[in-house]
Image: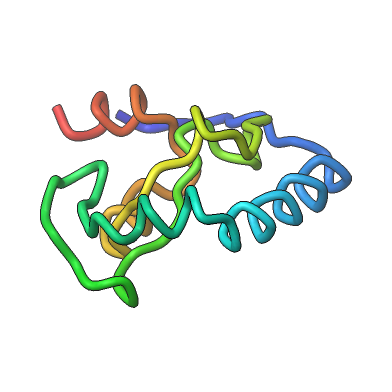
Length: 94
């Protein structure tokens, strides 16, 4: 499936949410999540250097940096997901 048009957020929103993401990465909550070492998308276990923060609803699409919207993701899954939502990712893989 091809996504011809994806509405994006304004730069102010993106900057604000990226700043929140940097703060969240320094939190004990996030360190505990990364410490588990499991990718949300593929379920495989990785070392800390191979893991990233992924927004289920991407910041560029209006997503926020909240505990309910961020997950631990391996770099490969996060790169494949790009700025898609999880639902769009599932549709793309069908």
